[in-house]
Image 1 (tube, rainbow, N blue to C red):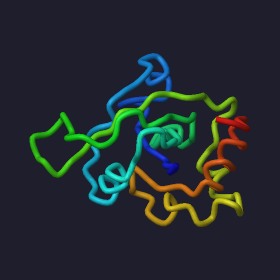
Image 2 (image 1 turned 45 degrees about the vertical axis):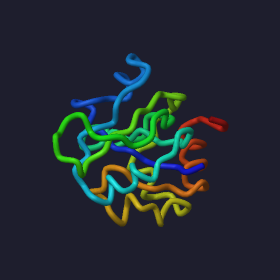
Image 3 (image 1 turned 180 degrees about the vertical axis):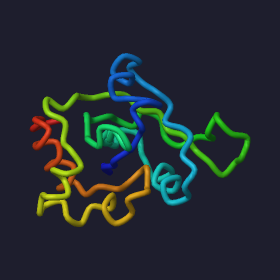
Length: 138
């Protein structure tokens, strides 16, 4: 299993909207490294939902339920989408400030490539952020 962090601006699509919808197509990614990360996703992988620009926090855990397919928002063949579903909300969102201050999270891809909207996580990073968010098991 692989672990990911996926960013969305809450005014475009929020964790609350995903919870309401029950699943969604994660589309609109226009960065080659982020696209390659999405192409690497497998059904059953877990991802953290991060509110970017506004909120700056991880709100919950989602599962990849459909692997990469052509992005329906463009006719360009280079881009892909995946489908996700919510697994569990964090009882306390984990802020960017909190993650940056945590020695266990210093090497996160998100901090090295801060403009990247779909980032890889190690299992240890994923589990640690979940614990910070009040989830001990997903």
